[in-house]
Image 1 (spheres, helix red, strand yellow):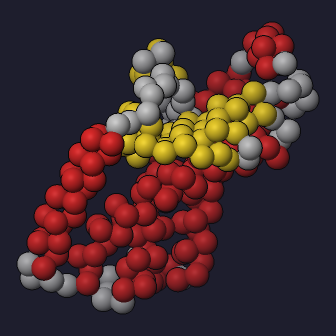
Image 2: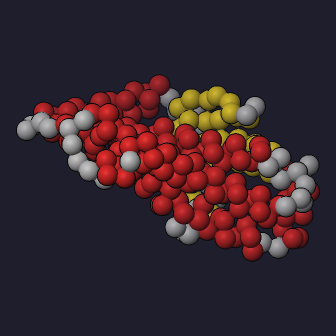
Length: 212
């Protein structure tokens, strides 16, 4: 995702423990299901879910990296929803990891008007774009036949799950949608690409002025 949201502050130790307990219970129930009539291909859903959070990091990293490559300012990155779980930095800007890792956003700002519409669209596309690279890279490595076939090879199951998790994430983000947030409606990546190309010059000029 490529949206903004209100800062809800740092999470307490109790909230962190509560989340960890919920995760533990979920993993326990999933383990019980796997052990019931176990077969390796059942692990595909486990791998799919396990890869979702790393792919979310990769998605937002793609936005931030493209912003840097385009000469824009990266003001901050947020991974997840809810209260802050951990703080770090990315490209010298603050990065927050929040309690519920379902979506994220990168705060950026243009520093000049050079190719501003195209650069903005590229920054929006970079998140799902890097996920598409993961999918096609895995498909190239495995081959089309193995990518879409079922077997009991653990490595193949893991790579298939990673590839399809990346593809699902990219497709979801490229479908043009407005997302409701506490600060109003924000565009997702797909809608953001369209709006970037259609926004007026005066809107970007004002954004540049506010960034200085």
